[in-house]
Image 1 (tube, rainbow over the protein chains, first blue to last red):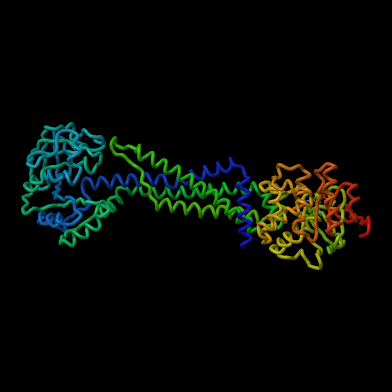
Image 2: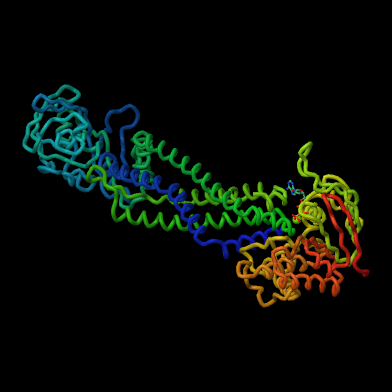
Length: 402
Length: 228
Ligand SMILES: Nc1ncnc2c1ncn2[C@@H]1O[C@H](COP(=O)(O)OP(=O)(O)OP(=O)(O)O)[C@@H](O)[C@H]1O
Ligand SMILES: [Mg+2]
């Protein structure tokens, strides 16, 4: 067996050393494309996921979100929760919010929306809401009878063609809001917010006090307490500390949240991802096999000669396993260079969606390793199978028949 | 040393079968230099391939040193080809991606010898055929006669029991042919190498001890040229 390996390696080495370099380059090129195909699309989808989860952090959920436990509609005594949370080490900022369902009316046009009541001054540290006002201004601490409307329902923003909207609502326009409990209010539009993201642009914002007032709430109720942490990645520890600090409501990290949400929102994407991986793998396997097979067929005579002079079939088969592993390794190497150059390119020039959403592909090292292992395994099989079938042929056939 | 009894080889089966060998018997002694002659299609190559274990007989007995080789399992036949039998192909059958020396030394490597020792064996064999200087050249950089001599070096490096050569001079001019035949003669006379060579040329028989002639799958004459 040692001799077989030695001789197999030697044969492979000679055929690389003196073989046609153009053919080698072509094979490596094709293999690198196969590899790229395996890893590129998932990276793009990973980029979209990151973008999506980033949105969730920046707007509805923060890094950690505390929600009412059990069947409760509200967190009772949100101020005491906030107090406990703010005292936890690693928490950068926190605020409370009150969400309410409502319909908004402007010149006979009506749309349904979630209206979030928030404390405007605290939001500067917690979310991006204050920073995405495309027209007009953000709410002030004392804002009453004022509303911020998402661009998609305002009818001015990108994507408003797809959704029901209020026509041309501008800062200064008056809108009538009917809350889920039947209370009606008339608000002056203070600003339009545009985040290029449905979760933001289909909503509206008012002052926290406004919702408290409308629903007659007392003792600082909240539908959520949104927390930002000092250090990205520490969410899980901070979450545990918040619980230890005596907060008995439900606590989620953005990752917990996005798991369920992304599962829904990206389900079709995920299916495409899985399918594309599967198809790439099949196509990749077939191509590797075909390339090596053609290579082996071209050397059928050589295989016959080697057998005729006494080289064991096992060495011959091994030499092809080595050879195709070598090709595939080079292909992976070239593919990695190609991949990282593309990744670098897209970091600098991200793909832009909705004019403002920048997608930067994410490098998933697990997937890279998985793909490398898959390709290498394939290469061994692809090398062995055809060589084995040819080496089983009789010497006469291998050498003298076409 | 070689004993062949009623050897038959049919290609295909039934009515359309080509009867390349119709039952031949002969014996070859150790140290003999034998030429096999006959018209094209008379079965010379077929016989040689069977003797070198590159092909199987349809029927008949074939023993080398009393060992019934035709019934050996493939792994042992492979080992036999590697260590006991040298075969010089009509069309050289060198591996194009290996240099002259590599074409030869890969076999010693296969036998388990070290790389260094294998290389020395290869150089020694190349020296015998007068090609030591060109051991680094690949087949494409050698003339037909040189390629044939590399093929001979490959066949004799292992010091085989028997050396088979199938029209080793078919592609060579007279000069190159003489070189090759001289190598054979020297091997035969100096080292007592047993050689079985297929040839078409009558003048080649000057070099040999014995001429066996085939006709249409049958052995028709067996003539001693000289005694050894
Ligand atoms: N693989 C094969 N399949 C079918 N018939 C074959 C095969 N090889 C040889 N034959 C036939 O067997 C007969 C003997 O062939 P062989 O090659 O032994 O002749 P030869 O004496 O070596 O001829 P040449 O001098 O032309 O080389 C021929 O009729 C040939 O056509
Ligand atoms: Mg012939």
